[in-house]
Image 1: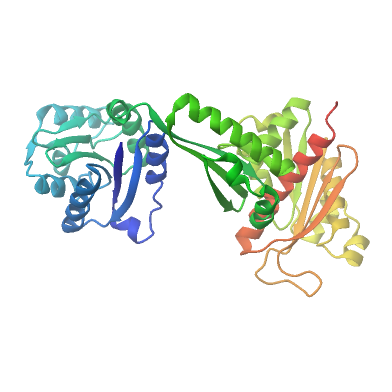
Image 2 (image 1 turned 90 degrees about the horizontal axis):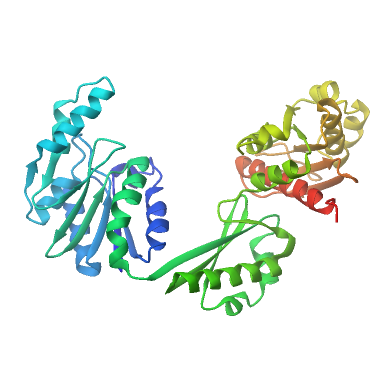
Length: 415
């Protein structure tokens, strides 16, 4: 089944709102075998909406539209589509009753403008929205199928899952589009591509995409137009081959983060961790505490931005700072060992660097970061020069620190 996706909202075109809905819709519909052939965004303009919906119906016969179903003056999607398809709006008392009840439960009274949300194109099916005020709409027309959902992400996701998917799945047939993502870190995209070699031929008929980001390079495998069992078998084999070729740089699949993996490994071994951060300013601690249950393993952190804190809180020797400089491997190691002692943890991590945009020198250019892991047998220290802006350098430093902790945890596991 082919479908086009249209997102409506001037805020999307201005870049004021990031369109997360399209990605969510694409993932969900692909899982039931719906192929999205085109994605289009238009502003809150009647003519633009009508042109886009009409063209999508002519090409694909089905279009899913998000946005512009609210009660304000710029919410004109429903009106534009109803006019295009000659389906005049009709007020439905049942929808209005549910809206009034919803407002009453919240201790509020609906505004006059909310009445427009009870208007439905003649012949359309209203999709009940238990998570908001604007119902979704299902329009079967001689020109094709139009599905309209609100743009509020939580409302869109729930309507998509509970109302749209059950209606679309029988039309999509048994062939599915499924993807699997293998996640790598601490290896540049070009180096990873060399290591994978002729991987595209090895995993065919699966498609392979390289998705570089601040946390590493994701490798996305996609199976098109096959039965579910066959797709899963292909993806299992393809992911296994990616893991074999990429080796230790693979840390997980799907939505797993490196912090998830590290916390899981620490928990499995009953170990605790503490962090000492300079240039990352607490970002590593933040990544760890993003993981549910991290309180079992994460003891805390010390943000030693100024040298006086490195000396006073982490017991980094002042002479070491004078001789080697704050951004150096010996200082990073001293920070890791200091936080390990101070917080009485099994693993200590130290990060110190020059995030930029200024502060670099010929010997230590902007982006230079020193990282250390203390504990788990021999300590490990690394100096790296990260590219990018200040936020990018900091994010890459945190990801690399997590990668080093994972390496040490795996290297010291009992046989």
